[in-house]
Image (cartoon, rainbow, N blue to C red; front, side, top):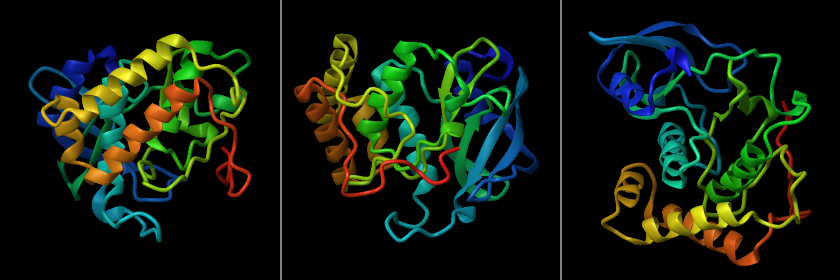
Length: 243
């Protein structure tokens, strides 16, 4: 992450710091900007995705992609996996949007270029995408930072109530679900079923109730099956383009 900030410090900076856009990032479907966020203590680069720059989609409600980006961070933290860089929803130079700490990385290195990615990280990534129903896990949406840690980004088209999983990470299909992941997913379902839990309250600001409940069902089904799911041959299983 930028400047090796702790998650707590990064969130405080993203929430309270002044945002200055530096330029638009190329190759993004929606308007996405590299920005600098600064307060009196520190500054860092961030990725700013304003709601007004989201391209309308037929199957996701307009103006909700930035909320889904933020919800993915909430779920990642609730699982204890730290897959998603610190992300918040706030007003910026172009209005409300998701603001995510920038991960310094080599753009030529992404999931499908990795020779031997950390198996724990891969298992978590695969399970995470099942739980959030990620419709767009491209290879380029997995970043490797300067320390070799993997980060998951671009979750704007997640949390649909209907099956939408499209991912390049299928090598674990049908294999047993690690006990640790099952335990983490069970704790997540318990938290999301509690209307007073901080995780449930945070997600209710970002998602519809049925979308949260669908995530609970997916997590529960993953644990009960004891295995990573196979691809559904009735719909596309890999996003296009895959990178």
